[in-house]
Amino acid sequence: MSFLKKLFGGTTPAEPEGETYNGFLIIPTLQKESDGYRISARIEKDVDGETKVHSLIRADTIASQDDATAATIAKAKQVIDEQGDALFR
Image (cartoon, rainbow, N blue to C red; front, side, top):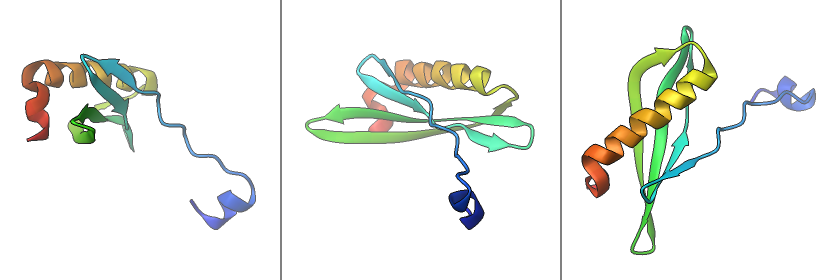
């Protein structure tokens, strides 16, 4: 964050809340692009006391932040259904 934003109280967008799905935590981490938001998420799962993390990034961009968040969660669920714990290998 720039010095001026800190000085004058600029804000940064809040990260959307995560959603639990089949034991995995999906946390949208949308990336702002010139034409919208890139589908991106962090997928986490606790395995034997250790938090495993997979980063999901797609080329797709969607204009609306809300629509991009919904598409990100849908894509993450699809990946979880297809790969399950193999995501972390």
